[in-house]
Image (cartoon, rainbow, N blue to C red; front, side, top):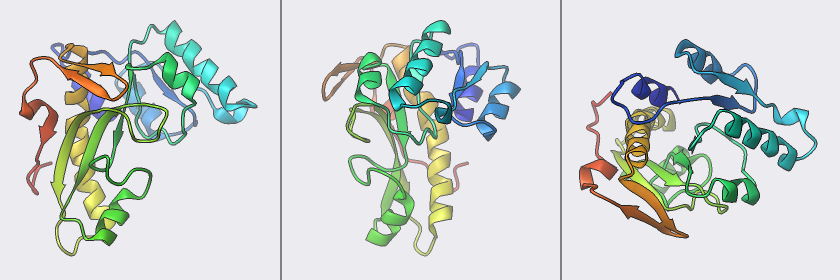
Length: 203
């Protein structure tokens, strides 16, 4: 979220952050949003009896602030199919692996356990199946022999901070769009737009 907020400061950036919504109070992202003068709303899932009621309040808030896209970041709840279908093609997520490999959690640890040489992150459209939506853009990060999951995760996070704003830009500029159940349509997109290979020293 912070990377998107920093990108949106540029008057030439084609997207505006109109609201930051959190399902938990007192998280650092809310303070960061306020530092960037972005309106915030806490919709605590503990205040609702069902997941559907909670998501209905989120959807109401999104409509009220006239949001056109939903960008997930650190949202650790699985959204219902009805909510996803309402925002089909307009909800994106960033995941810390090169999908379709290593869906789910603890990706850095699992990559190291498998002895992978390459790790990374993926921005994708969200579908009802976890971490399975059409891929928008990816960044590949070399695994350094002997590093631990924390160090690897920090470098993947750096790549995420570059990749996510670039992916949102492509959508906002209508250079990439949802094209069906398992397709992304590319319009005037180059390989450099959708793939990023940071050097080990990139920060």
